[in-house]
Length: 107
Image (cartoon, rainbow, N blue to C red; front, side, top):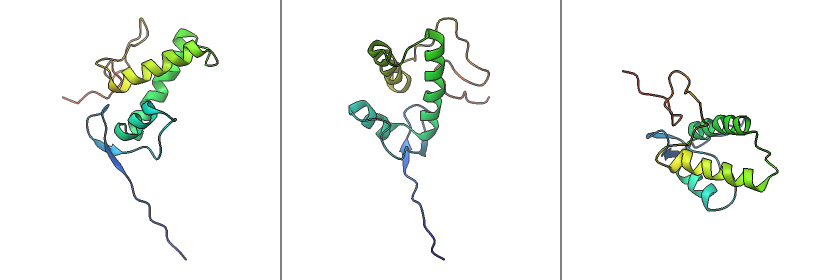
């Protein structure tokens, strides 16, 4: 019986501030996709996917609309690399999360 081994690549995650497993490949082509691949963990990417659903639902975005796509790309860049992520008006973080979406440190 043959046995395959898998190497796990680690990235210093810009969103969560620690070393975590990296994405397997860039999430989409282009410079932002590569920047995310180089700097964002699988965990943080999962957080973005949840956050993007919140944005789509809150704003009623039509993903076929180029303006909606542009808005989501801008929000993605802010989510990972901006000072603060723009959360929908009236949004309250779930218990245990900061407004930027990362789990809060336990005190």
